[in-house]
Length: 324
Image (tube, rainbow, N blue to C red; front, side):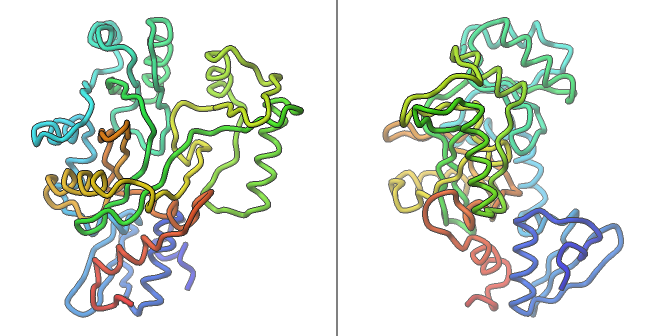
């Protein structure tokens, strides 16, 4: 079966894997107009729009709620779960946005409806940087979300049918020094390693305007030679789609934190599968964002650590009679 042709469009890595595994399980596919298809087995059937299989498992209300980032945060806080304060501004409201952000600096600036870590600026702590980043987001999006910055280590928890099934530590795009080569050369070396590994989800590192901004912020340049073991970051956000590393830590994260995150997600009605961006600081956790169409493939292809069959867990939930 040519999975990329099933809806007349190229599927994401996660959806391609879901479709292939569903086909192997004997799940039926019915091709429909408008690039839709129906998956069915026995009494279970799901309508898939725009190639988003996991969306079909979630309720429309859950999808709408999680799409509105500030609504999700407000809902979690109202249920007494830790989530950062945030406000949405139109791209013309930079002055009002700055007045809101100033007392709580540093902040995060990102698109209200963005995905995959695009145009996300983290740890913004002064007016000049705020203005530049706000305007960059405003060039591509009509609305900008300003959020309080929470310091700590960032993780992606993947939730399927009431429980956390995998956790990945997400590290921003980076290189590690060897005491001999420049940052620019180390980027080339890491990209060569990524090509050799043929890991389908970890992207090539790029030395672009944003990378240079991050280096400059830390008083570094592409010509800097890091010491042995010194980590140099090229992004503030940790998305795999912007060059970050996903490291499996499912067995290392405290069970109480996993249970706490799962309980928080269960407070969102109709949400059966999602990715949860979490900051862990000591014994506390903060939920940054909830994604109802998560990148499941990162758990199948971690940069380091054990592979997790998250795709199988999702299909077990959607079609329990096909569970292996």
